[in-house]
Image (cartoon, rainbow, N blue to C red; front, side, top):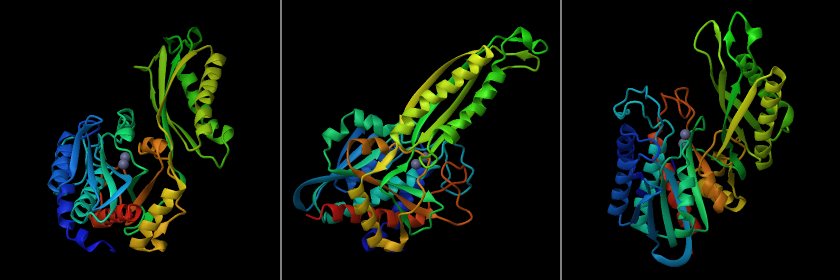
Length: 389
Ligand SMILES: [Zn+2]
Ligand SMILES: [Zn+2]
C-alpha cells in the first residue's frame, strides 16, 4: 500500500497501540485509560498536551519547523460502544459488555502514528492541533468541546476528520462535498389510554391500538411528506406497554430515531410526527405527549477542504481510488458539531470489502490493521500540504 516510508516503520507500533486500546475499551466520557495512553505518547513525541478537555479529551499542539500564522486541527475519536464483543482473537475486549465496534481504536492509533511522524519531521509551517475527542457515540463529545470553547482556545482555519468504512476496499478513500452523513434526532411518544379488561375493550381506550396505528402512520413521513430525493428516515425502534395477556394497559411508550440531511427537512420532521400521533390519538380518544430531542446535526463538508482532502488522498493512492460518488450515509457523526463552527472535511478510509467484513457496530467487527499506515500517511500529507507555507 502506498504509504510514507517512515510511517511504515511505525506499523507494528501502531498495531500494538490499537490492540491495547481495543482490549481495554471505554465508553463515552469514561476514556480515562485511553486518554492517558494518548497523552503520554504525545508527550513522548515532544508534543505539548492539554488533558481533560471536554472531560476526557486530549489535545496535542505541535509547531512546524517553519514559522507560520496558520493552523489546522486533525481529529480522532477514542470511545467504544456498549456491545459485547464476539471476536475470539488475542486483542478482543477484556471489558465485558464494551467493545471498539466502530474502529475508534484504529482512528486513535492512526492519528498517534501521524503525530509521531510529524513531531519527528515538523515539515510544515504553522500550528497543528491533534484533537482526541471523547464520546463520539451518542453523547456528543464534540458538542461539549465546542461548548468548552475549544474553537476559540485552539483557533484553526479548518478541521479534518476520518472514519474507517467497511465495504469500501482497503487502499481506497471516499468523500463528497456537502452533506456526507445525516442529522440524528430521537423521539419518545407516550400514548395515554384507559386500561380495561382485555375481554371488554369497549370499557377502555386502547393505547396499544393507537400505538400500532402511529407506527404505521409515521411511515408516511418519508414516503409522503418529504421530497423523494431529499432523504429522510423515521424509525420506531421501541414499543413498551402491557404486562400480561388479558389486560389492556393504560399507556404505551414508543421511541425511535429520525435521520435527515437538509436542515429544512429536519425542521419539518418533528411537527409532522406530532401531527400524525396527535391526530391518531384524537381519533381514538387517547391522549399523547411527545419528547423530541435534537442530537447531531448533518455532517456537511465544505467544498474547498473537501478538495484538499480528496487531492491529498489521491496523491497517496491515485485518483481512481478516491471515490467521489459514494452514497451519503444515514448514519450520524458528531464531527458535525465541529463543521458547524468552521470549514473542514470528513473522509472515509476503506476498511476492506472482503466477505468477512462486519459492518460498524457489529459484535464481529474489527478495525483493519493493514490500513493504519495509510491512514497515518493521509494525516501527515494533509498537514504538510495545507501548512506548506
Ligand atoms: Zn459508531
Ligand atoms: Zn465511529
